[in-house]
Length: 171
Image 1 (cartoon, rainbow, N blue to C red):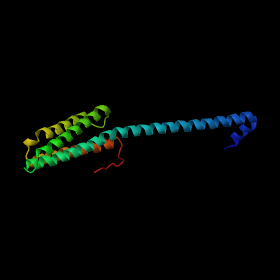
Image 2 (cartoon, helix red, strand yellow; image 1 turned 90 degrees about the vertical axis):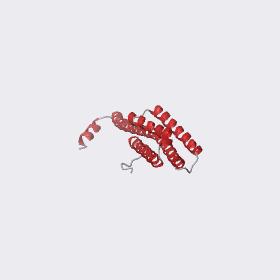
Image 3 (cartoon, one colour; image 1 turned 90 degrees about the horizontal axis):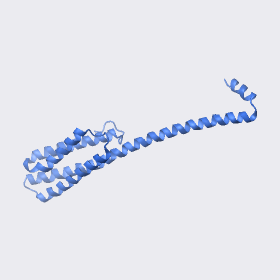
């Protein structure tokens, strides 16, 4: 197998042998460099996608917390045991969370979230925030729970689509 190469090298003068080996070495080094640059580019793309996903996840967690507080305070007020100033505090938290989510969504414009689902989620949050006095206590809890579940599912979807989590079954 190496006899052809051996015969070729034996026929060449020393300077040309050196030049041939240098060319082979440079070609190998060039190919390794190209593959390494390609690998780094792929990693940079993955990291960029992950950072877009993380930008969504933190405000979603805040929104879920705000909704849980809102659920707690509205339920106690609707049952006649709480004060509306706590609800107003939760309303402010929820409003801030919604504004943060909207600003992140406008800034990112990633394809993690379908626009229809996004608009529906924001409308549900606004409805719960504006109309909580019209609900019974059990209805308020059901609506809040459904909304928290929807945000949680959206959070899992964003995490999955942005490759933030490597777990395929995140239940």
